[in-house]
Every structure is written in C-alpha cells, then in structure tokens.
Length: 213
Image (cartoon, rainbow, N blue to C red; front, side, top):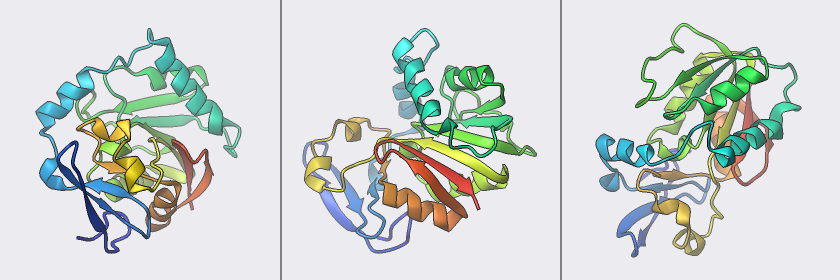
C-alpha cells in the first residue's frame, strides 16, 4: 500500500472499536481509511443531512467568520471572486463572503451539483470540512489549481490529528463514517508542493491557507 499523498510506503493499524483498518504515513503524516470501509453515497448524504448548516445556527456562522478572519489580513490583494467548494445544504460561507464584497459561486456534489466553476477562474477557493471526505485530495487540489487566477489562494478547514496512533484511536473525529482521510500541517505542505502551491499561514489545528506559485 502506498500513500495517497506522497506515494511513500504506509503502515496499517487496526481500530478495534470501529473494526476498521487505517494506514499511517511516516513521511507526510497522513492517516487514511482502507477503501473497504467507505460508505455508499446514499449513506454519505444521509450523514450530511443531519448537519445543521444554516445562517440561523449562530455557532456555525461564527465558525466561518473566525475561519475567514484568521487569514483575511494575510491576503496580498483582497479577492473579488470566490468559489466555495463543498458548500453543503446551506450557502453560509457564500453569504459571508458576499458581505465582504466578493462575488461567490458554490458547488457541492450533493446539494449544488452543477459544476459552475467550469470555464471560471477565481481569486479565492474555500473548502471547509471537505478534505476529510475526499478519496482523492491531490486530484481536487489540482482541480483548484486549474480554476485559480495567478497567485490565487485556497483556504482549507479540516481538523488536524496529533500524529499519534494511540490518540487517533480515541479521537471523536474519526467516528464520522464519512471521514476517510486525516491531515497534519506537514501533510498539507507536501500536498501543496506536489500541486504547485505554497503554504502561507496555518493555525496547525484546522485551518491552512495556500497560494498558487
């Protein structure tokens, strides 16, 4: 088995509570689930339908405001056009970006499946609580690259793991059956380099800002 991110050898380990096999890469520090345990798209959507992703959910809105505030002042030029990739059932981030003066397209494979980004280029692409669901993060980041303006930004949110298997096996975040891959700062640094990006800023917890080289 080779790493999905860096193609190095990975080590398997077994989660006795969830009865699942994961793989851990020493090189880029990613952890990912064996594909045998992936849920169907029907079950995946059912899981997403349980989320309360709306403008009425003040905690959810504040999470996104904090996400934007974390990197907003680090943008060399304020973006004018954005794409929120994986927006979920409610376009909360789209509304918040529009309040900051941007035009914003949205895409989600279940809730907004029209590929509005085709033939479009963006100054900023956001993807929050999405990358942990992806079987192919390199393909998705490469897609972002094709739809970014020169020196464009990608802002990602996904809870980082500690890089200790014993911690991972107690971690609540792994219990979501749609979470299939788990990142560290180092993972994103290597992924960024492979796809033609550089890391601009991270909180080393759940947010990372990339810029197209």
